[in-house]
Image 1: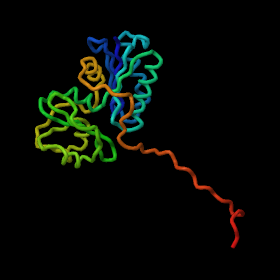
Image 2 (image 1 turned 90 degrees about the vertical axis):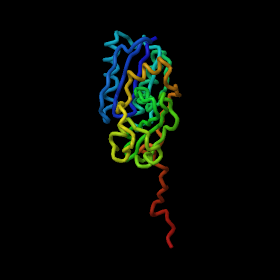
Image 3 (image 1 turned 60 degrees about the vertical axis):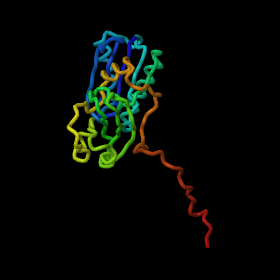
Image 4 (image 1 turned 30 degrees about the horizontal axis):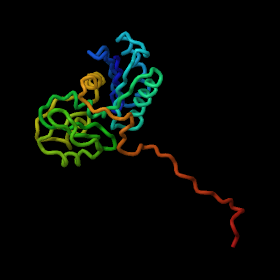
Length: 225
């Protein structure tokens, strides 16, 4: 088995290679505007360090969001295309679950990432890291009202909107963004739910396809009164 893991649903562009026993190589760069430029070079570096060729890849795990449209689709298109070329099986994983898999809590907690537009993508988890609600998108203040007062929140959304998501619970250590090394190990261990490789946008992208144009009647066609 050679598993290639990647996620581009947040500002982090993260990749890892796993041989079924351990992570052989991993790369992560945080840059919200350069997903398309960074992903392929990081994949090449990780594969080279692992001493593997693309034809060796048997499985691909990719974060399917939720996340902003542009960054998220970079990872999904790359995963699908690579799987088609090398004949690998591709698995989708909720990107919030990847962050949750790195949290050692023992008690309920929530994960929130920055959804922009002063909103967060979030999900809640039990003490074992199993998702109990979400994923969803809300304003930070609305999420704070939704969660119990003793439930801590981790992730970049919790850091960006710390004032609005301030909890009475003590801070909980956890990553800001998904980590492909965590994703790979969680998939191998069967600790995350495998999903269809379809994007979890949760809201419409900023760019919209224009509607049909209204017909323009030439001036000389119009009936004179």
